Image (cartoon, rainbow, N blue to C red; front, side, top):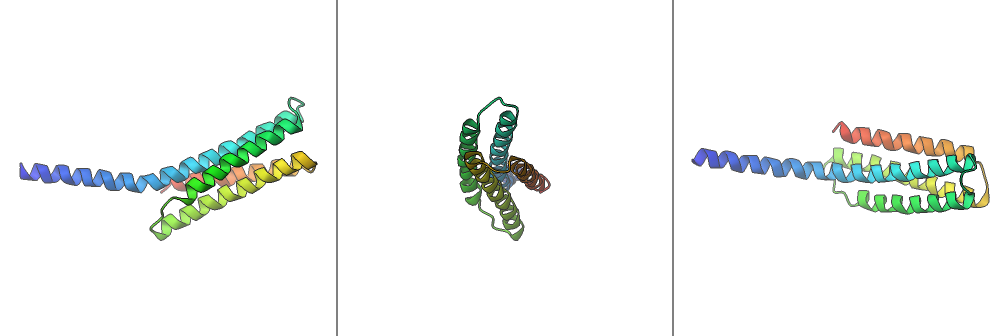
Length: 142
């Protein structure tokens, strides 16, 4: 009976430790996915505008809303605790991808408001999306 109790206690402790380790990655993953959704929203708005299916004002609102969502993801990712050097590097990489994405989305809103190179913004959004995908893949390999 005593050994069984010790085995159960060890199993519970292991489950708690594993779930505690997974939580920061889950939080970073959610923040990255939220950011990707914002980037994709702006990409779709720009595509719709290019096809004449929406106005630049509506696309600008979509970009502004996406920037707000990404700001929320920034706060979420910034609150992730990272006690080890490896975890700090992962968090830093994730935050860099999120920060870059927000800058690109804000630039898109400016270009939509004031006019500018929509093709360049489209390329910047693609690059931001690729950086987010790389950060997500890095989380998955941990």
